[in-house]
Image 1 (cartoon, rainbow, N blue to C red):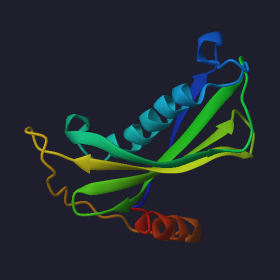
Image 2 (image 1 turned 90 degrees about the horizontal axis):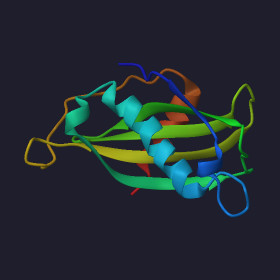
Image 3 (image 1 turned 90 degrees about the vertical axis):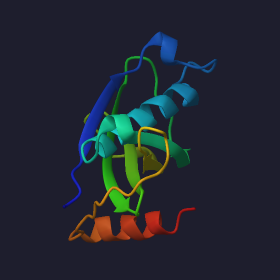
Length: 139
């Protein structure tokens, strides 16, 4: 299976801001995980996926109230029981990446124990190959 990119947009409102009147990192982390979950749930049953780690969220610029946060996510690495999703954030209709990072999700059974998912991905795009290598090196 080839990685598919999913887009997830959020309007930034007053309740999403911190004391500097910019997007609160905690709220952004919530949306970041949701964006990653959407990509993971496109490949596996949503009820059997759990997030176990956010591998960094590096901001390069703040967002303000009224901005639209556009997340893009795709499964970029598959392990035996895990998936790693690459997530980026851009301001709506802009090219500059404001935030990027990886999230690891694990496929679990009804008792919450990790179980093999049997998935694999085919990488043909050089950018995806590079992201896959970055994801493979994450612990």
